[in-house]
Image (cartoon, rainbow, N blue to C red; front, side):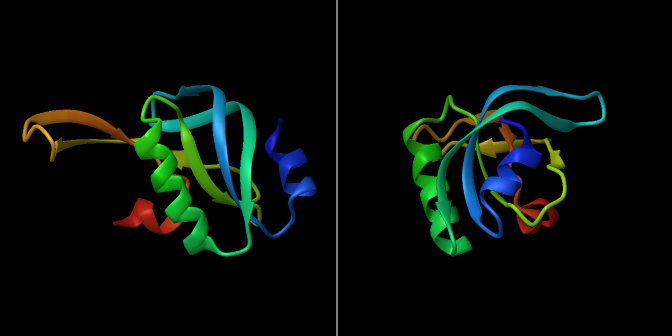
Length: 105
């Protein structure tokens, strides 16, 4: 489903979506070619909590939480090094999030 159709179908909603087909541009933007809406929320806190649970349960899947007030999905992919809590090993991870506040800090 395209973002414009999703925005029309789910006005003023927080959504949890899954990227079914996506790629990263050379400048680090994640482009979602095909998207499936999994859940919808009025409250952003509930959406974020659910997103985190889904991400923990299915780390290999590409989930995002987004608000349909956004004209376009501009998702910046950032590379970071982190310490894995369960194994206490340093690993390279991708951090992907479409929430604007998460991208600033």
